[in-house]
Length: 113
Length: 113
Image 1 (tube, each protein chain N blue to C red):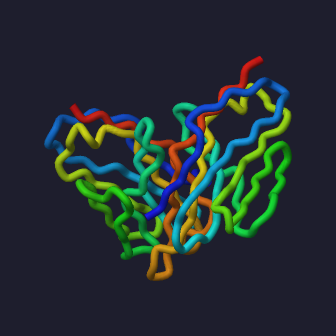
Image 2: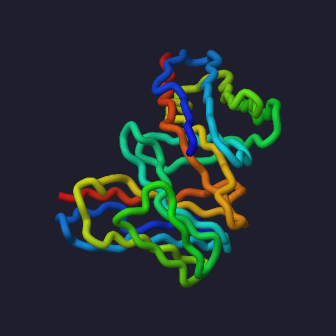
């Protein structure tokens, strides 16, 4: 089975930097995704890491350490619109040439003025 | 492109009724999947398909059936609705065998009384 842990809630101030951590235990690891989900809406893709290191995309960066089973999402210059849930998801090989994406429970980020 | 579409947006059922949640995509994606999202539980995989004619079970398949007769459509059938199936259901699709970014539909909110 798979186990994915991330904090339930976080609060940060507009303009600040926040780091959302995700730890996982899985077999057949093939990458880690971060999705953003605003209340009442569908998840939308933010980032994908398959190799160790940092991937930067504008104000958002994502880091992966496969040996430690650890990832984080870094959000810089926080804006009010960044208030959302952030979902960590692990992609693992499920056999017969297919893969499954398993989600953590999500971290609800509140950005305050 | 319309992307991933789901119907209905909202549905109320009585215990024991059956219904089909519709999902369609116009991106020629091979991989399609169904998730349910419950408070405090995150997104959980119900069923998935790696191509027309091929389906497989995810983490929580009981009480649901799927079929994939075309590349575009992946309906989810509730055989005999139960209150425990009250949830938000998301359909998602991606290229290939599921390794790529998944695109989510807008969701169907289901209430079973």
